[in-house]
Length: 239
Image 1: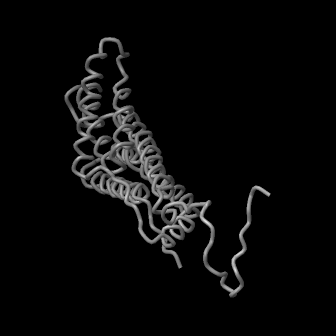
Image 2: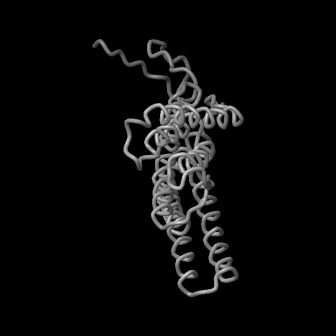
Image 3: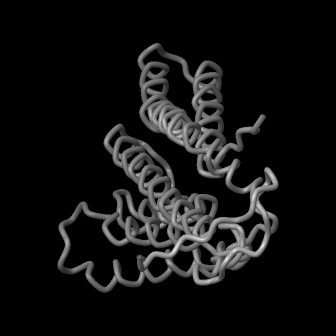
């Protein structure tokens, strides 16, 4: 029986969904203690639902969909790996280096965003940060992409969203904007990280060692008898 292995992207999305769900509940409970009117309570509850609840649901359903897609592919992959005598490990980027790449990608994206700031509209804080998330997900994986999303969100909010130089979400528009950026970035990170993992898997499965060694010489004639004891039969192609 082949055990199913959960993809790191699926595990990461589930953790993100769990954290966002906890934040949603925490904000709602905090609103019960720190608000004095029903209008303020409803406003904060709606803000928590838009900023954290909806991204949590999307991350959870994307993880469930990716898990269902990988479930059908896991069994043939594991059967081919178990049939091989020696597995080849495709080199991957070290974890520390992956997170350094995430920081560098966000820093470069921030520099480009600052350089093109005079040419952008007044409310376009995210364009270059999407590219940073995609590159990080491709090079480093889903975990570093989460770091890139967090850094990009903080930089975009602090430097390019009104009121400037603040990290608060004091309006529904700000909450909707940030939550949409987080949702789209999560999907982008999941897609790029999954594609990279799929390419590494294909490279691993098509390597000579995973195929069972070097290809046999077709010109070499059999010299042993068959399993039933009868002599081996030689077949010439050029009859």
